[in-house]
Length: 351
Image (cartoon, rainbow, N blue to C red):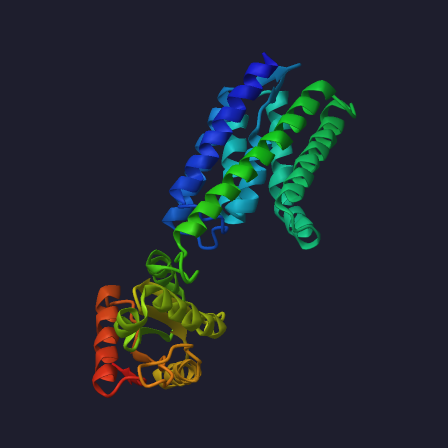
């Protein structure tokens, strides 16, 4: 009976967490704002908690299941705004489910957990960086709370030690498996957002970052960057030489990347930069430094007269606005970039 309940709980929790990561598109950043999305996650976690109770096991009148693992996982990956209300609602449902001394004991355990889990998690996180160790310590902490509740209600230090042991061991094993799966999912997600040749973020990553940054940041600017005469490089020196030029330019792009700026490869010789500055003039000044550093590069290519083939970029910059679709913003910057091309290339224009 206990083994069946444990397997059922493991299956429910595993499927629920994987589905949650699918819904969040692999995002493991805790929820920070209370909105409709937060309410959805609270309802989701509460529903999972109810299913865990449905497939629980009763030993000496006490209901055992993996709710504590659900809480631990949620506090780490969804944050307190989702986890704490979920714990309260699940505890309330459990209390009303079977109104007796055991239900009161379970409700007390949940309240202890509700009050203490987030401060304890923050403390653990300050001293331990590895995810597995953080979760293992939280599992043992949940056992400590259960022991305290046992002392308060039953005046017994350890009750059903074998049951606790099985839950803890299988819980740690399942958390290890889950972390491995989630790590692989994140690795695949990152690979899907990286350009293979340059290792810069690709257009898929750009659109995701743009939607996130345009909602949070003020004074965000977008620049379309195009390598001048790149098609001629491929024609005169071959595509392998063109690839080497892309890699050399990428080195400068990566040096330019910072907390407030990032460059993405959109395809071919075209790139997009998202940059946060107070004014478009300041953004242009930063991009001007990038333009100068690229123009000073050694291309390693010689033309028919023995002169070094120059590597330069033309740039078009425009301001991002929440009310304007991203396609229109890109189009504006693209037009400014072509104005820079018409002005003789190796320059920057704004729109």
